[in-house]
Image (cartoon, rainbow, N blue to C red; front, top):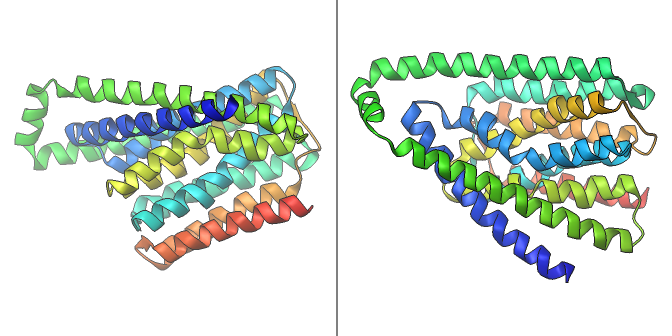
Length: 314
């Protein structure tokens, strides 16, 4: 019966992603905001809701390994699988903001986690600091996008007037909200049934967190970025991945650590280092070219497969 629910969850995820991408793309045009910024904020935060719920519940239950495993596993899956597939479907355009700001912050978040977790725990003070960094980042994005939209308004005053006269933005919001609900419900359905199957196979809490749960909670990001790539909205596809990875560490672990200090020895440095490695490879690819090519997408898939193989062996 769990297999049937798994298949149903994938259908819900697809239609949820379709609604979210359509609504977000349309809203960005109406507001004069860059689709990249929409991907980094509204889309990435929305698609990361399953990770937030799962890690918060795990923290409340004292399941630190599951909480951290979910976040690290999701971040690896986001870059290795989601960005890899997105680039294979349609090469991803690299924007200056990503290279100069967002990807470096994503790498910084992974390194900061690595430093905080040297003693195999994350305190409430460290969690609070991560939350403050996240809030500062969101404020900066808001201020910079507001500045950009003012420039757009000056250059395209007639279009802005049309936006004011239009009420279609309400429909965009409905698409976004319904899409997010579909993604959250679909991923929850997927995670619950996947964990049942994994437990029957005798998998450990940390391994379940970094594989089954992480993959399940990353399904909204996967569905959204793949649909965005198919529609040639590569800015939303990569914005979703980078924004989700920043959100996962700074906000999700920040909230989880405030709920209950995180402490576990089941997560080793290899896992944390691999998250940093994927971020550095992404930055290098972006530095070398104006696009993330299909071959580079294949390279990301290979790196993820390599991690999974090593993890299985050790």
